[in-house]
Image: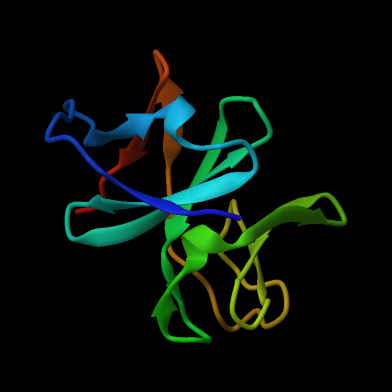
Length: 123
């Protein structure tokens, strides 16, 4: 799976939504890395739909910024991403590690508006 890095624009509306890239910049069933403010965010696209999820890009197990290169799938109906290094699985909606519930990734609200992926900036 190929991962790429996108840079966010400076456009944000009053609810702190930041446009990071066109939906078409994310190949189906892959992720990209974007810098939102000072945070590295991993953005994932499921299939050829506009279903997108966002988590922190930092893998707490390998201590590397690699989550955008993770493998997408589901575990018993729970959408998840598996770390590309040690393969721990994280729930894309909650960020909780499915293999060790004491560990989690930050999650970000993500949406697609007029073909553009937006992430809600924290802080």
